[in-house]
Length: 125
Image (tube, rainbow, N blue to C red; front, side, top):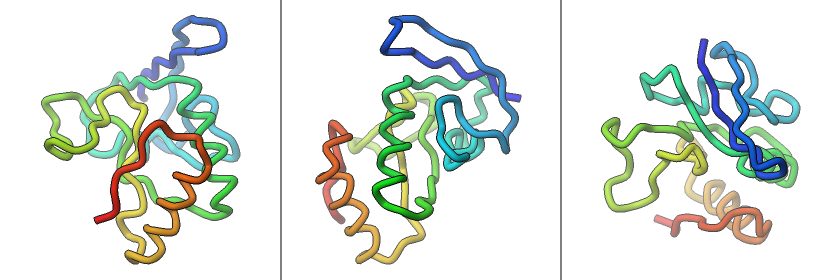
């Protein structure tokens, strides 16, 4: 069971939830993001994010219209990351589509950019 701390941008308050690995993240629509996907390989039993991030995920998933595989969206600083690239320490970034073909991953990247939901979308590799 994970303790999940969510900053609610609307109320300016922290909210605490307790969820199992196969349960959806707080504010997640239609069960498209499970706790285990959000956590990834992190060993932490305390995870954090904000409501705005969960709402952006819901919207992006709706726009995309199909499953988006999530490798992780949360890591503590000493658990690693992408070196000098994107970091997931605050639970507000998603490592996604690693199993997609390069063309499909680029289509998702373009969808994320044109959605206007995200402050940063990593460059194509």
